Image (cartoon, one colour):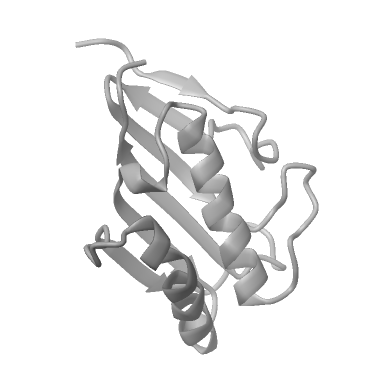
Length: 135
């Protein structure tokens, strides 16, 4: 079995600590939890919709750097800091998923509401597991 490769492509903001944005072993790619920071490190907005859109864009950019896309996702795990943001998060998914998954078959998603994320201004964090083509 090949050793995993860890990388942090510059298509998103730098990691917030000592970790990599991606881990890859063969065709499997694990995307570390992504948040609403733009590639330049600024926050996309202070609302759930802006942060959710940016978070999905970050996951997509990371997967594209590995030859995949959001269509390559096998599973999402989503963390929200407020139950009041669930409907707003769902609205963003309902906005972007029909184009990504036109057959209406969406990847599994576990949604958790947590007390806080690594920075207090963050409202959503999403991690993903994907299968992409050969490296």
